[in-house]
View (tube, rainbow, N blue to C red):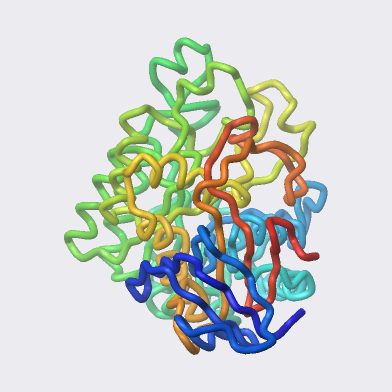
Length: 431
Ligand SMILES: [Zn+2]
């Protein structure tokens, strides 16, 4: 691997430095050495004509399944999927087996990620022990071990009292509580969003209120405690309104949305495609429009994948037996370009901000998310914004339950650089 690389003539789009201009980028021993200068003699040149050079993407929400379900994904295969999608950093959710509620699992995931060397992996700590919603995990100990994000994702913190305590800890240790907002009693048995489509398809539904009730509770407690709250995978229009008002009132909250909620709606389940069975469920056209508008105006800060690999036999089961979730790391950029940037709903710069600089800020990462400037770590993504492709297996992920299977998307990652080393070159993982 050369320790100097010259990215020639790409369009550098870097929200962190408010840059959008064709320029050369020189990378030397893991760092950006120069912008806009000519190639030094003897350097390896990557021709970036027609391509976009951006800060590497950062995912706040990926399920890597290791330890426990290595048949679905491992830290290594998940890292490879991430690099293939242009990511240089991802947060790995805590709902593994065993649960990441103690430092041992955190250290194990970090060691596996370092060994793979394809993407920086930041393990998320559990909020409650075993994700059981009874007693709080050792948040202080995990924070001291460098954990920044805490979540019981898959389920919410069940009681207001526990969440209040978790937010108080979050404030004391300067960490972030990330919530999966879902009222269990309203969502029980649900297969999809409750509405005209669920009635037509004969599937049990869960209303948007299942999310909104918990969002409202969490925002109230964040205001009370002064803690830091992050809302995972928002899916309903009323949730977006609640967050907009809370932000205006100064509540310390951030929010994410997934590419699949920005793309699909409940009606798309007419095919009973289990890859479109996700949690929270795909909701109405109005909800999707509100999510797109919330992303455009900054109410929703970041795009996160909720990458959720599942075994083939699980997704081939009957619809009501199939587990919810779609993989997402390898299609997120293309989904966002196709659904939002191409139709002019958001700018290229806003898309990159939501995929990179904003999630890096939420995770507190100084080495990711830009700026693309001399001295910064060379964590970069180079992509073709016009390349069109059909999503199909095989994936770099060990699983293939993609909601986007068979769809045509525009935008493809060409190179990914992790501290100056190519983890993906010419569209292929380098190891
Ligand atoms: Zn979740």
